[in-house]
Image 1: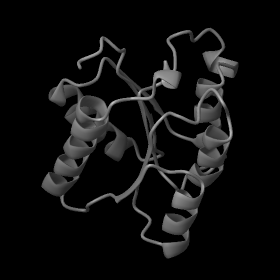
Image 2: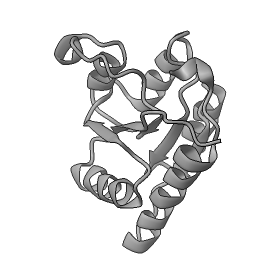
Image 3: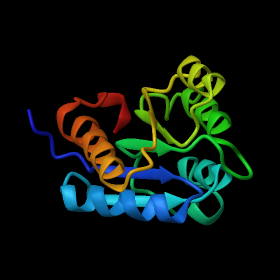
Length: 149
């Protein structure tokens, strides 16, 4: 069943280059209505809780959050903990898209409720394909929780 759901993505990554590439892939893929990029966890917290610079935001929760682990101000694990402990946010799928291969980051991500953990490929074409597959699954194939909207 194809729902007319607003397909927003929140991309939280301190790498401008990785964020730009992910935006291009998701935009070309055509599964996204809006992509919001923030470059640190503190800005993501403000975005998700509609405060600070995002106090007037009223577009609902994103359909997907792509989240880096190692970031300034609030790291990805802290942000993930905040998301999954909030009744209004916890059903949003969160995919960790990160350069970190540290076992402790992988384990912590899943323990905190991450839906997937993807290590960013270093090869351009592999990165593009990984982001395309993430978008295909979470934005086209996956049936979102009705509690999300």
